[in-house]
Figure 1 (cartoon, helix red, strand yellow):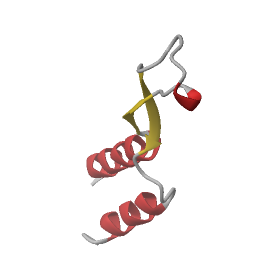
Figure 2 (cartoon, one colour):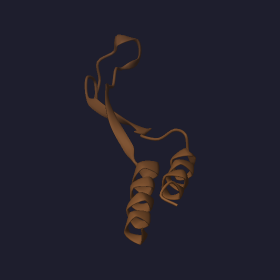
Figure 3 (cartoon, rainbow, N blue to C red):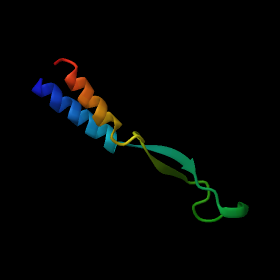
Length: 66
């Protein structure tokens, strides 16, 4: 039970802190070509937008065996 507690806490922390890099393309304003035109950049998006919801579900999962 103690091992399961640590696994669920670690997985919840990793999910809450996780980011995903979504590729995007940098376009110069109004069609002017300049330095950086057509470069690929990344927009960091959070994997978990719900904040503390995984922690609530982790508590429910840990209460289930009892």
